Image (tube, rainbow, N blue to C red; front, side):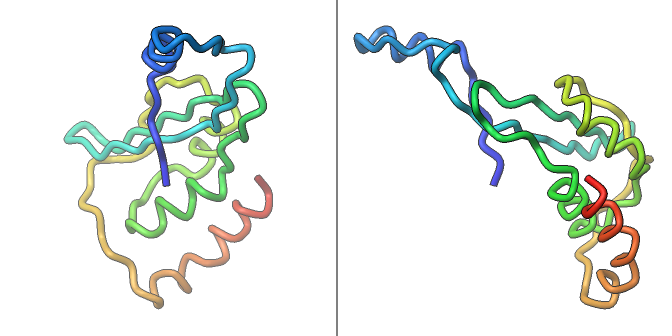
Length: 118
């Protein structure tokens, strides 16, 4: 599950309620978002804050595979490793497909190789 959090709003709310929260003591996991637009498939990966966990490339590969998207897996790996928060075009425009077990088995070797190498 991906949860998007606006850090500034979280800090303002905490301070308004008398809290002493700051980005220095706030731990949030990194997150990714994939947008399927007319111009193509776009991926953004945001870095964690504090002691939060980084996004794992394997999680992104699984998400992509579950939707049957055809993308540049090397570019996905690069975007995850850099985690700059910028949207990067990783594939051509396409319809998402629900993949069945046969599709998953067909793509299994590529996806597993990427998951274990990330």
